[in-house]
Image (cartoon, rainbow, N blue to C red; front, side, top):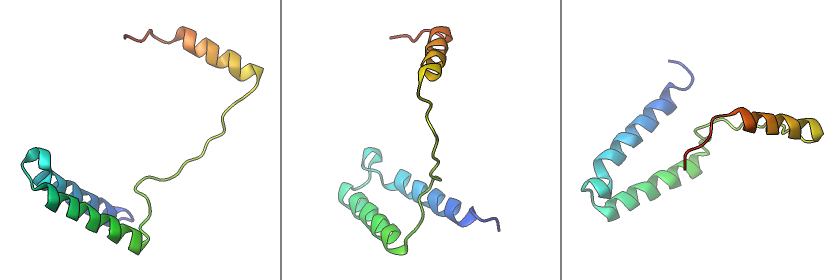
Length: 81
């Protein structure tokens, strides 16, 4: 078993539960809310890590960074509004 397999299986099971019980798809809103509360309590109590890793980055400042950002924005495709 690989390191993240159990977490992936738990997330997949939770997503399947949400699809089956979501109020927009005909599920009971109170039961759905109670299930979400149970999951949140369980995650906080067990100290489960976040689903995604936390990644930091260093943002460039200064005149060179301003020129690089300006050049990038000029060359990219126009956005449709």
